[in-house]
Image (cartoon, rainbow, N blue to C red; front, side):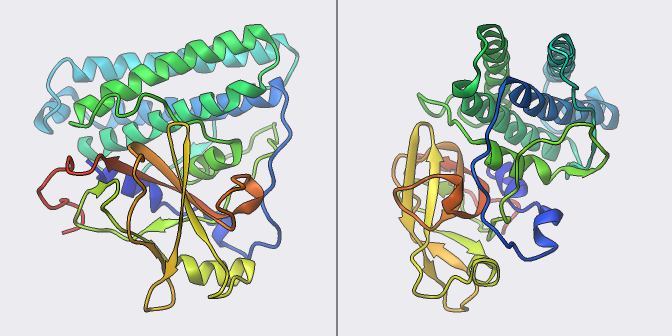
Length: 322
């Protein structure tokens, strides 16, 4: 079901949209304490998401939506896991005499059990990508072991939720690592308030919205329109119609660039085909480079797509974009 990924991709990051971008987002410098607080920020978000879902929807509600027992029981287990991750990371920071961050205020665009579960798929996938992207920077062996252990559990959550939605539980032989600023950009869409005693060195990119389509995304077949992206690039980065811009798809260990074109309305960017090799939960950014994939080149994103192998997408129109 592509709804979950269209939903996440269209969320606005108000702090980014409120004023013109005056400088490029840069790759942050991190240490183990920063990485632990980064992980804790994500775990608090996930914990609150499941806490709200279990409070808002009953076992009967999930069954009525097509999620048969023991799905509700397993959601409670996922919530317990996220709570345990919060406790473990907070304790590790405290033991290291590093101030841990706190729970903030969040808003999740889930309005019923189906939208809750589809958004769960997105959040769990982002969590896997976040831990995987940070692993290379962890210095202490003990912290690396803890992060690897949590990553494995988050991956199990992802597979279970994806299977419950009728999606492939393991669409690719490799999961997708994602950098700090890209993950922060996605997480920031859900944070609406609160104050943390910790300031993390991450910045959100300008948002990237996908035009809704009635068709499911397929690699090497589907087009993608990035709504208002050319106008935004003009306003924020002084991009012109002659500036080459690339949609870079992150899928597994691959980075797949495709040059975009400006649509007839002179507001959107578009590509005619998602590149072959993109599959599962795929991230896409707009970049000024097709070879340098650093944060300094990114002008918008990420957006999230659920991409099927060519010829394997559902044949029925997508229910949210008819």
